Amino acid sequence: MLIYSSELNHNHNEVSVKAGIIGLPQCGKTTVFNAMTNMKVTVDGYGGKGVESHVAAVKVPDERMDYLASVYNPKKLTYVDMTFVDIGCKKKANERSEFDMASIRGLDMLAVVIRAFRDEAVPHPLDRINPLGDVEQLQSEFLLEDLALIETRLERLEKDIKRNNKDAVKERDYLFEFQKHLEDEKPLRTYPLDSEGEKVFRGFQFLTLKPVLYIFNTGETPDKTVDLQSAKAYLENAGIPYIILSGNLEMEIAQLPEEDRALFLEDLKIDEPALSKFIKMSFSLLNRCVFFTVGPDEVRAWEITSTCTAREAAGKIHSDIARGFIRAEVLSYSDYRACGDSYQSARSKGLVRLEGKEYVVKDGDMIEFRFNV
Image (tube, rainbow, N blue to C red; front, side, top):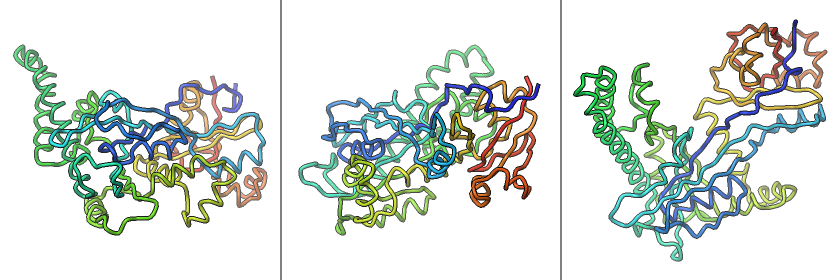
């Protein structure tokens, strides 16, 4: 029997993108977390008091979803979620930072907050305001964390290696290669992996393996005495993306009533809120995109990788749809709008396509899956 995906209940175990916000104490990390999540976590810093973390999930803003909701007026509207983890950290002047490593497990990416503001009431743990120095400091500390993880694992492998366990020997050889890469001051994300190496990697939570985005946290008015240019040039040379924002200002904006935000942004000549900018850059960094399922019962956005096939996308909705996949009926959001929000008009123009299981889903595709169970 031919069934359409709109006739089947969805999976309820959707896992959102998880971004960890990390940085030295007193960099404004928790302020940035509040700005992204509209939370009101106390922002007087950890500064050596502890390494506890905070977690919050937010709805990913999407104007396309807002528009589709206005057309379909569905009973239910489901946006993609993004989870933010404010990673606790404490640091003493001559010691390595202590991160809440447990909260880093399972993160898809790291957002590294770099202090670019002066405030005598909030002293920098290293008694300086030097964005480039902080970038280099954190990169060095991430490398050392990964080296320590490898050393611990190598010690545990010794017994198995003495018993001539082939898997242990293979893992050790890869770990030696990773160790050498890190000792050359290169992050593991730049290591050329083969499939066997990927299997070894999967068992660890290496900091330098995770995709990274830097956030320069300025004052409400950027301080010209803070050398931001050197840090920007350093990251650009390394091909690492960054954004510049005022955490305090963005936190204030996030906590305004929604109807007042647009006017406030316009007055301050801010083109879009930090959350929107961050999510766009994060999805690009992680090679993620969104497709839509629409109807009177529900309009829903689904987050997938940019290489996701139609059959894999069907599996995001329900395993039965992937198993019984026949065809995907696809219309791009832009074509839908160009046809006056009319499926009938889009069909008559040949814009509604029937795609097979290997079709690579594009960002903004509106899809109805045909399947048989």
